[in-house]
Image 1: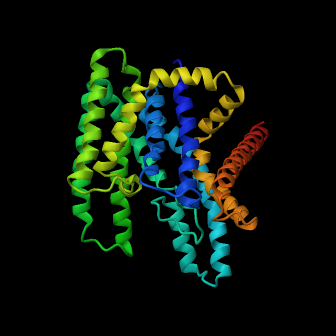
Image 2: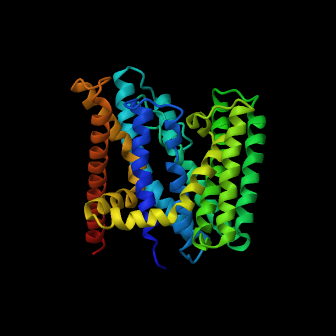
Image 3: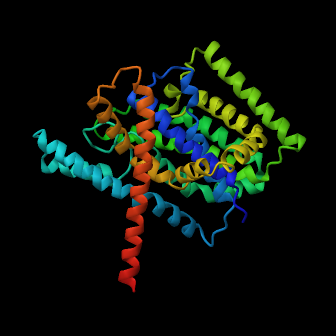
Length: 365
C-alpha cells in the first residue's frame, strides 16, 4: 500500500484546527460568531481521513481491525480518565462534597464513556463526545467499506437518507423522556447514535476517496451538483425555514443544516485537492520544520484530542496570572501558549510511551 501523504497532512491540519476552534469556544479569546462557526469542519476532515486511510488497509479479520483501533483509543483514554478521576476526587474532597456514593458515580461516569464524565472543572470532559462516536464508527466501518466498494456513491447516498431518518425519528422517540436522572443517559445515547450515523457518512466518503478521479467528467459534475445542492439547502433552511446558520448550534447533535454545511465544505476540499497537493508539496514538504510540526500533530491525533484540556487549563491560568484575560493581547497569547503546551504534552506522552515500551521489553527479556 502506498501511503497518501496528503491525507496525513490533512489530519495534521485538522488537529491544528481542533486546538484553534476550541480556543475560540472554550477560552473566548476569539469571540465566536456565525461567520467563524463556518470553521467547524475539523471533525469532518478527521473522520474522512480515518475512512480514507483505513480503506487502503487490508486486515485478516473484523475483530483484528476493531481491536487494534479500539486499543489505540481506549488505552490513552483510560489513562486520561484515571488522571481526571484523581483531580475530581481532590476537588470534591476540598469542597467537602466527596462521599462513597459520589465516588462510585464518578468512577462509573469515566469507565463508561457516554460523555457524562463527572469532574468539577472546565475543559476536561468537553471534547470527550467523540470517544463513543469514534468507537461505534470503527465497529461500523468494515461493513461500510464493503458497501462503498460494491455500490460506490449509492452507498453514501443511502447513508445520508439513513441520517435524515435518524434525525427525524430519534428526537420524536425521546421527546417525552425527562432530561434528568436515568433520562439523561437516554438522551445522551440518542445524541451518540445521531452523531455516529452522521460522521459515518464522512468515513464512507473517505472510503470512496481512492476510487474518485477528479479528472473524470462524471465525478467532477457529481461533486459540483452536491456543492450546489448543499449551498441551496443552507439558503432554504435559513431564508425559508428560519434555521440559524450558526454551525455550533447545529452541531450537537448534527442536524440537516450541519449536513448541508458539511457536504459543501468536504466537496470544496475534494474539488481543491489538486491545489492542496501542490500547496503541500511547495509549502509543507519543502519546509522541514513545518512538515515535522504537522506530521507530529497528525501522528498524535488521539493525544491531542484527549490531553488538550491540560493545555487549555494551563493557558487559562497563565493568562489570568499575568493579567492578559480580556485584553487585546489575549487571543495572540492564548493561541501561542496553547500550541506550545499541546506540543509539550505530545512530547511528554511520547516519552512515557517509550519508557513503557522499554520497561515491557526488559520484563519480557
